[in-house]
Image (cartoon, rainbow, N blue to C red; front, top):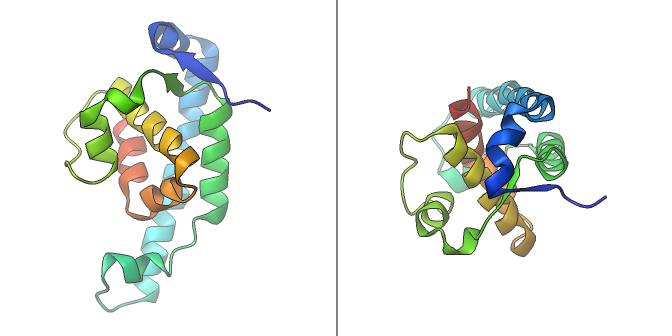
Length: 141
């Protein structure tokens, strides 16, 4: 099955459609499992760990695979010149902090993460483990 990319110019109407609303509603279901995994690791390892050490205890395999499938086939991936969006690239690479941003920009950032996943097969997993994906998804609701 081929990934579904929604062109930038059609994205607003897609989000207003029943399919777009359902895709967003399904995205909300990923919040609780991610939060629970962060809490599980925090309780299981009571000492303060570096971010890299903490990531070794996290298990987002199932959630990550399901999230990847959902983003790839739901139409929530925005087709745009993501390589030219410096601000977005710096945010997903952790160079810039995530500002208070619109839902549209959040979905663009999630799209950038997925596009970068093609080149670096662990980019989505790293973005989940460092909490960026959870912050972005929670920012939609």
